[in-house]
Length: 266
Image (cartoon, rainbow, N blue to C red):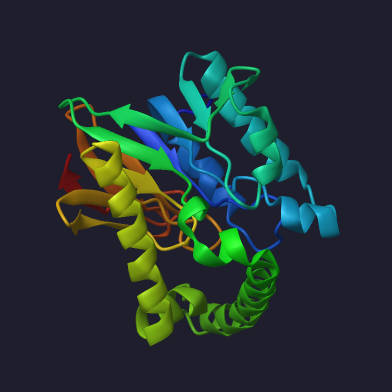
């Protein structure tokens, strides 16, 4: 890319849940991550845009244009860019099977690794009972999530002044609150079942803003996480291994990045 830092070459990159249009998101970190990585194939696994937020109040700073242009530049340079819309950018599902520039829009696809294993790639909202059957409740949940983010901003303002690292209230709740853990488990089970029905080795999804990578019922389950708080992405190395990258846990900005990641064989 344009700057002089070392760019890591990977075979595939999976990013989801950026939520452009929602004010407290980590676009700067995502731009930094994309500038540090080049991939043969880039999967945008849904909710890149937040149509729900944009419909209520237009919020589109110049930083968003930088991100979009960066993705278009990668596509024009030869990367295959595949956009799989989610529930927050579901209006883009009207364009499935078409291209915007070099960016292809599909509902789901199958990714084949360097070792020949196959992975269903899908946003995942299609297997969220609330989203599919009670959209009004999903909007209530979206409001509550945004309220939690605003509380989190205040908490982290104090933490920064105490010299402490960023802390996520919603991520803590997802790990500790029994109902949240149960919902995540049911979501994973539904996606794993769909992968089994599709005859693939694994599934790569987003939607629940909870990055994960593990085996479940003989299926390799991978969730990309989000760029609202977690700043997580999945990459496939040239050798065919998957890595879960937590970008905020890297070295201090301005220093060479030392990759801290979780790895699993594909």
